[in-house]
Amino acid sequence: MIRIVLADDEDLIRGALAALLELEDDIEVVGQASNGRAAVDLVRAHRPDLAVLDLEMPGWDGLDAARRLHTESEIPVVIVTRHARPGVLKRALAGGVRGFVPKTTPASRLAEILRDVHAGKRYVDPEIAASALSATSCPLTERELELLRYAQDGGTVNTIAERAHLASGTVRNYLSSAMTKLGVDTRHEAARKAWEEGWI
Image (cartoon, rainbow, N blue to C red; front, side, top):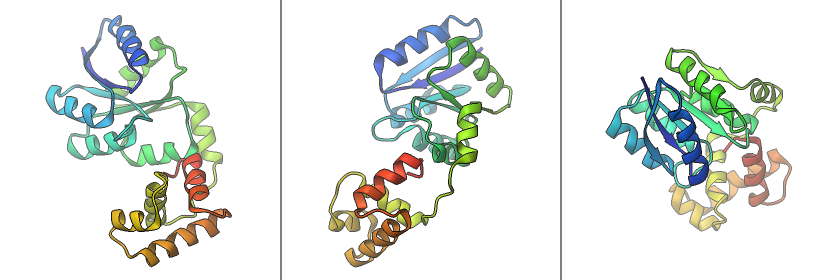
């Protein structure tokens, strides 16, 4: 029996997927969560064989949870997503994710993928892989990406500086550098472009 924890912030989708997977003779859903932090807690409590995580969830998203799980237990993680931005796949694989699947995948096919991942294999949807291979590489530094993540929330330079424990002038310099590299006029445009590419 393959025991899984399932996380998706959309209750209807999560419940439907759990019900469909439970129809499989060899799969048991031992826990359901609506965000990444709760999913990590469920994995700690139930010690499942696999975690199936939605990419975009409030608080910790699927990648945040996957990185935490990879560090703690190396449990195999499969990410399901509606929006497969190219840079996200690279970040997912670097974070130890073993499967990357679009939400349009039929439940029976997902069950096959879960069996393969449980057996030690990897699975990346071919279309997502092709998009990732043709995507441009990220020109931004880790610090620039960090500050653009904070800029996504619409905070002021001073707020971003407080969160990053940097001087406001230093934050302005990093954000200005990121804006120049991305060819945009504001930090909000830079954050949006970085998000669209899947870099943050």
